[in-house]
Image (tube, rainbow, N blue to C red; front, side, top):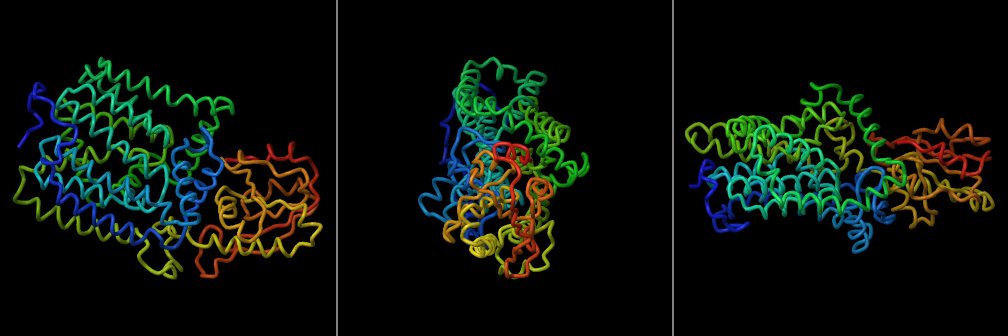
Length: 500
């Protein structure tokens, strides 16, 4: 068995050495996860963010207020191939999550881990709550951790082989990652400082590393130009998220508690053990320092706890390999912990009938609750729209209070003959301004309705959103208003209504 202490003079091995990998047991782990994700992929309905990604894909651009273009592009492909199919939309999420299981095992293999270590590393990825729930949804937070895992695998392999081509590949993967989320910039900044302080400093001297970074910079130009032309709205979005996180998560203690919840029953102790092992191994100490640095950076900047989740798989691999020499007590501790984690993972997926969400805990079932009721919302809006007199309806625009409600109406509205919706919230504000001919508005939802009242002569509640299931989620019971007598041109009004 190879050991991580072996000399850097070891001849480089192929980038993928399948024969040396514990393919079968890892494939079983990945397969079980895949079965669970496929079985639940069509349950309930779209999550609010998924609806937005579909809408954003149909307004494809080089950038958005809230994310780069990769995930909207994937959503566009899925909705073009199978319009309205939530199962098709989630295929990329399932594939990258299953792929992450294999890459996590490959990191353990690079470190000289046994079959058992590889399986533990793979299984840790497969049962981590934030990765399991991510695999059920197409989101930036699903694609991003997988790509981080690939990058850390390439770095671990580079430390062992010193094959600089791996750093070029890391740059190419980083270029793709930046099209999904900007968080990888923090990873490289912190990792660069860590390598400068603790080594290996030849990482920073590698021509391939700098060539990779040049490719990253070049491929990022279109979205940077998009942001610059619009006053860097994604930076403002980061500030809004920081305010939201501080209001819900709280300070450092709250951040760490939520981060622990996302990592899971196995993930936290294994990750801490892996962190200790990286810090105790000179050639890998920079990875441990990077993990600590990222958590500190995201706490200070008000990032969401899952932002640091992409560094966990490499720590799990180090922890799993460290357990190789402790064969007597490991089965008595690790496998029961995994059984509990599997139970938690199953509970986090929508296996139960949708009616089970009645009275469900809003903190644990936050995602499931917000995958219910979107078609019914469109039904209510369509009924209110058809009830308008013909001459009023001809001059009525539909405005969602948030990007979620607008995105739901963009997907389900056309079947009811509804016009394209608008919203002043986040990225949806850029998708268009209501026409000047629209003197009346059907405003869906109660968010920021106070901002729109002063600009219309009358604001009257005409309908109520009802998912017909008695499930209390974010839009259940929300009002639908008819706003008549617009006082200013939309060209003046629309910029004042924008909010993040």
